[in-house]
Length: 386
Image (tube, rainbow, N blue to C red; front, side, top):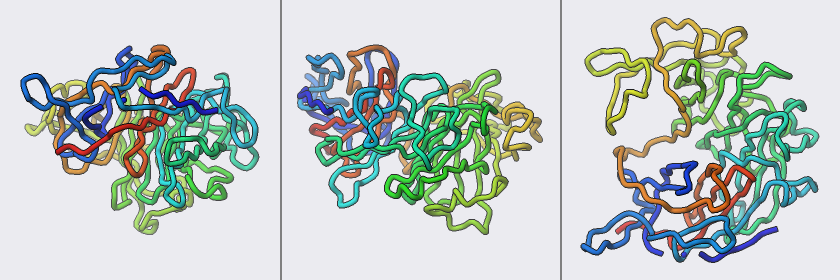
């Protein structure tokens, strides 16, 4: 089932997004030198301001966008169907878009932040299941250049609370379990998902070298030798981690992470201090844009958290924490700060927007409403800033 609704404008869009549970919905941050999709509109005083203009109410009551933009419902939890016949799983979350073979459209790898009891679990497709006791995982959704659904299928099943993740330089997706559960086969890991090769997704194996904790997202440095990972946890707050590959595993590439030993490389947690040398116990004190700290990295004593969670273990020195360490990306040399504008509004409920990601040609923005579960393809006059 697909549905298109014309809604519309001017201006542009940044790849750095601000997500909100408020009625205002999806906000966009214009930041630094990321000009590829920026846009502006003229104010009465002749000054160029960020944004595409006011949002136009959606007659379908789903997604209000600026004039000139439209959306297509790519997938709807419990309504659209996988190619194997089961309904689309619920709670779509972190997502990455890869160029479809032939260049005609995209392949979305779509996380499903599902626990054991949530409705519309990821089907336990034989050969793609890690732990049959749980209903999280990922689906791959192929769409054409106009954002129309082509097919959807299970690429990982039997994981728990797949929240965010990260794209690798070799065009695969790392899906993260936001969990510390020891139930079943054990959870709180990162798994690799291939957007193109289903055989590579068979018999899933967690990347235990990255550690076991409440993973949120991760980013692989362009050189591929290090991975940075966030932890979304409380009581106490979570940590920021860095994993460094062992020399014998380099260069990392497609399939190499899955082959790592459980204790491969080095997993460390960040300790920050001011330029004057004062220890920073929690990043919540960083309220001024552009604040920088000195950083050192301390080895995680037991990365698999066999008896004590990684954030509660005894480090060589006190460690820096942070509340709600969520999304992250690899910077492109731009400065922090910038302007924010509203681009879309969830007219259905107060559920959060998740997984905003652009198609390879930057003409389609994919985004999800987590509950009751929609995946949208948004198209319109995205344009470069002059």
